[in-house]
Amino acid sequence: MLLTLALAALCGSSSALAADCTRETLQAGADSLVAAQVVGNPSLLKAADGLTYTENFKAGTLKTGILATALKIDHSRSSLDTTQCATYTELISASGTKPYVLGFQMHFSASGGIAKVDALTTAKGDWLFNATGTLNWAKKEDWGEIAAGKRDSRAVIQAAADAYCDIFANKSVVVPWGKPCARLEGGSYTGNGGPNDSCNVGIPSGVALVDRRYVIDETVGAVDVFLSFSGIPDSHEFRVEGGKLRFVHTLTVMTARSGKSKV
Image (tube, rainbow, N blue to C red):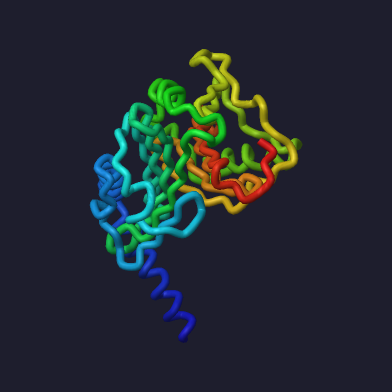
C-alpha cells in the first residue's frame, strides 16, 4: 500500500512538472538568461529555492560566475526540452573586450523556477578558441524548426549523439553521418557550407566521453551533451535530420581540465 501511494505521488509530481513545462515557459527562462548575461545581473533569472550552479563542472554561485559579467552577445540560440523541463543555450560574444563562447544547461522546477544552472565558459587558451570564427559559421547554419512529420524521436536523436561520442573510444561504432555534415570545433570548421561537408574527420582514438547529460529538443532535432572528455569539461551539441548528423558544435574547456588530454 505504501509503495502504491509513493508511486502515485511520484507520478503525480511528474505529471505536474510536465503540465507546467511548456515551450513558452522554457523560452522565457532562456531569454532571461541572455538578458542576465548582457547586463551582468544574474538576479534577472527566476531562480527556484535552493538553486545550484556549476561553472566548468565546479560548484559556484550565480553572483560569482560568468553571469555576473556583462557581455555583448553577438549570437544566441536555445533548445527547449519539455520532457526534462530543461534548456540549452549557446552564447557567442565575439566583439566584446574579452571574447567568450558559452554553453548553459538549465533545469526548471515544477513551479517554473530555475533549479539548476550548469555553465561552460570558453575563452582564449581553450581548444581551438576563436569567437569570431565561431560566430561566422554559427550564423550561417540552419537550426530552425523541422516539420512535424519529419522530426526524429528523442531516442533517435540521442542515439545519433551517443554513436558520435562512443566512436572516440570504439572505432567499430557505426555513426549516422549525414551528407553534408559540418563540425564547429572552437572556431574551426570542417566544412565550407557546401554539399560535401563532412564531420567524419580528425576524431581522436582511445578517449572515453563519459558522465553525459542531455538536453533534447525534437522540434529542431537538437541534442546537447555535457560530458567529461578525458577529465576535461566539454559540450557536444548536435543537429540531427532524418536520423543523421547535420551539425556538431563543441566547447572544450582546456583551461579547466583535470585529466590527461588526447585532443
